[in-house]
Image (cartoon, rainbow, N blue to C red; front, side, top):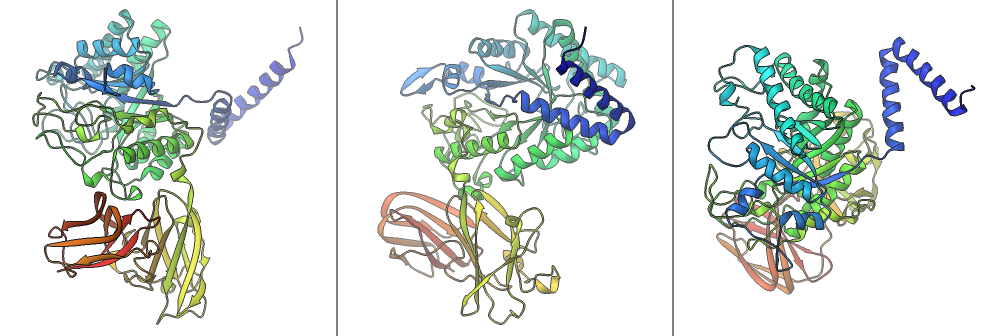
Length: 589
């Protein structure tokens, strides 16, 4: 019988591609990229949004009750109602110090998740306690093993038997994480080095975990995906490159931890790195841990893990429940736009109780949950239900103005600005003379962007044609200026080769709102009086970088302490009921 035209076409095409693969490794990679691209187009990738609930059983046993709209509810019901689709649980081997994150605890948790309709990611820590880039302690039961083959077999058997038991009870996870934040060596004994990576040993052990999952899939006809989890996007490209060079490629998903403040990346560059990982290694990429505080306050005496150092400059170095939601929404949209497979928020239900951790009584995360200090749901959870077919409006391009005062500098060959905003291959933008030796260039730049820029007086990339930016405002690479774009028009205006600003602070146009500061210079405190009610005051350094934010409640005046600031010149950005904030110079002695 004659083959159908499609089958004949497909068979011929596959035969040609098979020949190409045999002839050339390079063409094999091209073919695989083509195949992945084609399949992705035909079968859109699922995008997961969810939460790590590893602490939840313990919190409820400690008396935590969760509320939505003043009504006590099961947290699984709350999160399902806001369209969460996946939950994650950590599993410790045999923790003698806690009854939680054990096999029985995880089994109970997965049962609840399955009943509520969630997909499940099970995170094998392969330790009796926490593992991360600085801790990968071998389980006590395995610490006497010196034969790598025995250790590998133990890892295989433990992984296989755990999954087999879960299968017998109808509780198999959809994804399995082979280790947690395994940037360094895994299964190390006390005193053994975590770095440099012993790739031969690590690949041998990790492959035993993957083989255990593969065996379960083969026996039961399941399709559990394996996840390899690395902390910080900036570490991932080099880690997975080295892993591939050592033959470690048999997993399904690259998992990342991304916590602003613990990473060099803002939300845009973190998502872009995820896209780079996907196209380079042909793997799905998920952020399996992230977090952002909704407040700096606390509800107990246990030190919180996230503070002001975790704020993002592109969000004004401040926070609220709305800002937490926006950070997560914009990160998720950017992840999806870059081909990512999802985001899991770490421990959004780890509220404060009277129970203890290894470090204190209460929670170290109550300021980063999706619940206020009375355990009532707040806006942070709304990122789960956003319509990700629509770009969040704060990511839209905004008008940015670059100005430079060229007094005393040569302008014979024109004046130019260049930077990240011009594209991967930097381009010169010629600036227009507007009088009094001031040159200007305006351009729309995507909201929530951070990057480098610098002024030139000749478009030739010669270092002699480039301004010399003083160290105190050379915030990019110690040589270039930094722009930070939030979601409003911005202006960056400086004197050539100087940190001294022109036209206000070099951040935004000033407004006519009358604000009085006294005493000014200030020694211990400053009093602010405004014609219009003030809802926020932001303190900026001379480069226009936000260093402190005070949230007010539409007050006409306010006092704040200045003793925490080194002596110098600052700017106060005063947000009132007017459309634009006003900017005012403050001297601190």
